[in-house]
Length: 431
Image (tube, rainbow, N blue to C red; front, side, top):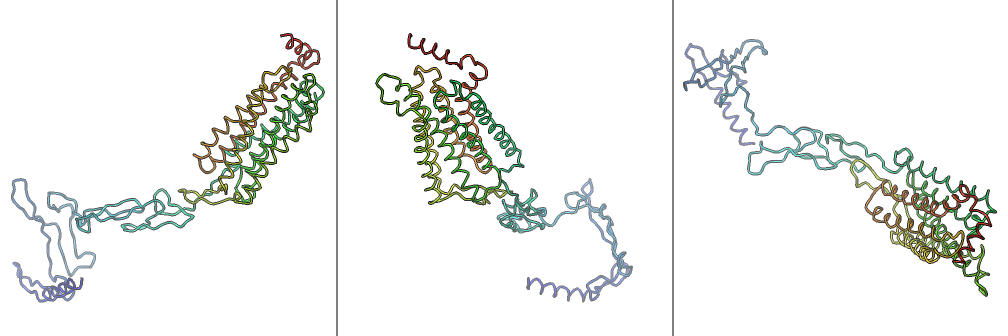
């Protein structure tokens, strides 16, 4: 640059010494500013169709006129190289607009470059820049990548259509155990309600309602407290629910064998045996949850690795303990399924083992399909998958176990009598 400037000064000094007369006898010279002193015209040499050259006057220069009237050029009369009227450009590339940056083409002049979009998370709010600017941590570029917008917070809320739909379904389904409970209370002295341990049936209905209401904890902004209660409440309530069904199944088997002459199992028939089973099976799940909370409890976290949004979610803490809790629920369900399958054909008028068998198949199927779906989703959809599993498995247990009894109580009261039981048992033993 210094060398070019020296050449420029040397050329300017020579121009100041130029002084000659043109064909019209006018003196031509350059003043101290390097401006020409006489009237001049601008000629454009153009190639005609027959191949000859002609001169066309395209403008003039009048140094002693007003500054805004000294120069006139007729652009439309100028014919540039190649026969074009458009003014040629001094660069081979157009300027890069906002959201793009310049990248020089290898092996070509500096005026030749490509315009490429800014990378994700970057913007360019100046024209012809070669560097894009990274947005701050909680911001993300707009579509044009010339401005940084604040990321929106994403979680499964009650205002979200998906969250509102799941909350509505939860509220409706949670009324079903209450309705069945009222039906059972009203008909508490009938054979159908008395069969297979009436008290455990009441307790199971209460637990099913709590299982359904657990889904509401998963909706809303995740906090440390709600993250802890989400999984622990879900694990404990469902373990109590499956333990109750297991206790009812064991009661069916013991009750049938206790009717045999000389059987010593009569002392095991009753509510004490059932609630002892529920307590022991649920206690181990509580122990798992306590260890989980002591070792690595769930907590809320911000996941900023998503474009345009910041995800608030519950980190399970120890994912091993989470799956250990699910595995224990699976073990309880499988044990219950096996016992119910064995007892499904026992000759009892109101033997619900076959309905328990079907309910356990539904329960295990739902939670086996839940695991891959839970792993493959993120954010609020992962929460929605777990809510759906909770609702579908709870509703499946309720319908499979209690809908046949409600059908007999409400639709077929003729089957809910002692005479019907005696006739059916007589026919079973005759056969």
